[in-house]
Amino acid sequence: MLRLKLISAAFQLPHPYKRETGTEDAYFISPNNLTVGVADGVGGWAEHFGANSALWSHKLMNLSCEYSDLPSPIEIFKAAFNDFHETIHGSTTISIAKLENDTMIFYNLGDSGCAIFKNYEMKFRTNFTVHSFNFPYQIGSNNDSQIENGTIEEYKVDVNDTMVCASDGLWDNLYPEEIGQILKKASINVTSPETFAHIAARNLVRSAFTRGSAHSIQTPFSDAAEKASIDYLGGKLDDTTVVISFIAQDE
Image: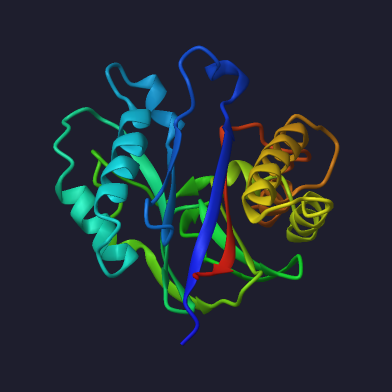
């Protein structure tokens, strides 16, 4: 069987209001190039004294990286969550992807997520789990959701596929076709998969950030608002994190 690996790179920007405090998004890339994750600390906790969603997202990603040798994403996250001994209030969404032979296995809770692009066209994306518009499932001190509320999905991948794992700052602002075009442009005149991953992650975050500031324009976020009978047009400026993983043969 052909052995595969992930060649990954990440880029992130905080919401402009958080330039001094830093992003509540977090991510990890495992040392063995088989597992990545993204978490989005829920900003609504900022109104509560002493709460810290950034602590939840960052520590859970660090712990998930430590346990990334476990067989599946949900086992990785269960181990990380069981090792999380903080009493500070907060919560986070979670998305973890692990390569097992020629199959990506995903665990997803909330509105972060991962997608697979073949020839710059999206062929698969994890399901978002939300209570209602702009109210994602999240795990944290309020016991809003349990680990079992997340989804477990699989998708077979090939050499030269690209996986995009990101917080909702990407998915709320760019359509899949736009993401595919940015991936395609990032591949032009690059000398290595590592360079492609770095350029693609950076360009996707910057494009999502620009769109998030736009008004009077249709976006995935405004589409979701319309479905919820909410009158809204434009993007949603947010912390934005993207991890790009190029699927390569493991020599």
